[in-house]
Length: 169
Image (tube, rainbow, N blue to C red; front, top):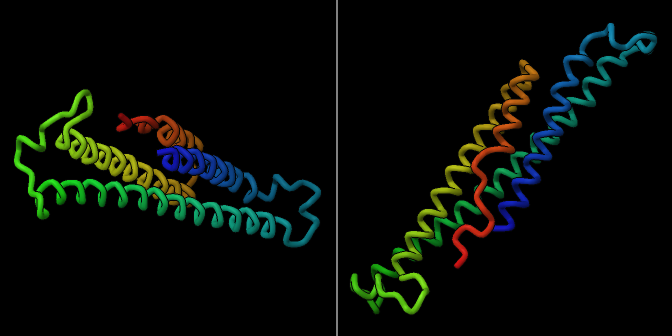
């Protein structure tokens, strides 16, 4: 799950960069803030456009990061579905007793499958939360509010991140 941690770190960094640009846009759109630079024709439009281009690039990168999160969730879904199918069917169909049988301190096959289901559910829930936060950032960009940006960033950083060794036996 180090991939998940790496993606989380990347998404937080991308979010902070986007939030910084969104915060600057209000200041940049006020011609009073340019002072002597107002004499340079088109400076305000050029600076705002450059920031908008940078914001667009970051939002696109965030979308790609979210696709990578979704890929991890899909992989976990496939693993848990495959585990269930292997336990149910196949040429060596197992009975209930065999599924719950333990060998020493190792978990039973049922415990492993239940663990995969739980891991998938946890990652799916976290992915959906991240997706909502990224969508909210795009909406806030149109009508920025620094307290909203800060609250969303805090949610992204403080959300119930999945512990790296979750599911490791």
